[in-house]
Length: 391
Image 1 (spheres, rainbow, N blue to C red):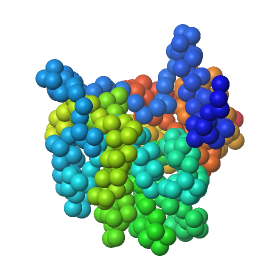
Image 2 (image 1 turned 90 degrees about the horizontal axis):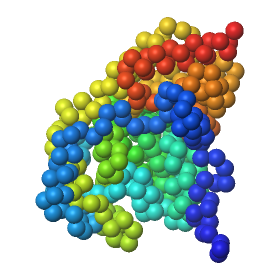
Image 3 (image 1 turned 120 degrees about the horizontal axis):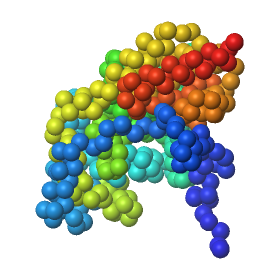
Image 4 (image 1 turned 180 degrees about the horizontal axis):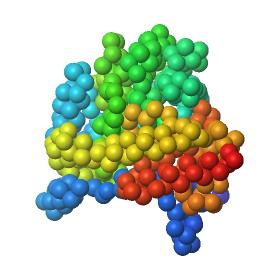
């Protein structure tokens, strides 16, 4: 067959995509071996029946044709209202475009911000799709390594040193994979670097409703940042609607107008009945979002208590999201080696830190996505296994 475009074949950079342990665990399950899965950020509860009822009513009511490409007016207005209410930053419908999930929004935002051949900066550790997204749009993939000893908070000086020739910086707070919430000081430093080097800031805030300690600060609220920030939002984590594929980009009006042109030539919008369900879900307010996040808040507290019972495995301060990042360097193993041996010995599947960049080497990511009792049992078994490696 004819050659495929490098834009497609180079997405993984010719290397691993970091999901080998997950795939091996799934094969073990398919072959009949029970495995406790603590790998992916998928809620252990399904989408609330009331949201599904709203989706069904909208579909049966006829909202099954083409929907407006930037999103239905009511949903864009509700997202704008929500953002303005929670951040204090003026936001109108012209600042919002609805997308088929957060991943689509990340791709579109980088296509808007990065000319081909420009450096695209992002913070390491990072969500596993970030490098591939940047390669697909023709950017130069440029991770900025953070330090476990700093709680994986980004240093403005490190970003500044890499910013020459860059067009954008991607950040994610609350962070996947670490659970870290970036401090105001860290975000203010990032904002100064973006202004100094005339960078677009792409802020992935899909976990903004999952804050267990401290506060979420959107960098769009900082002085001089509204005109250079594209915020990525999603219904996936806040409302347990991962499969519904509803997200958004919030940014300057001119950028949103051009992004709407892009959507016209790519996704052609999001199904109207799904948008109606998202609108219904958003209108349930903060109490509903707190209900969705409550299991992870409980399990984060469980994690703190269980890890305090031993001194081999250490937890990076997880102030948000549905994950804990564990430091297993005391075992002498890499995250990859530890995860594979844990899977073989105890049939517990976790993600190696190396799946999320060089900064997380010697760590593992644990998704808090099974019921409390099973989670506590698995975490204690993980710690006991780590202890045997130190004997």
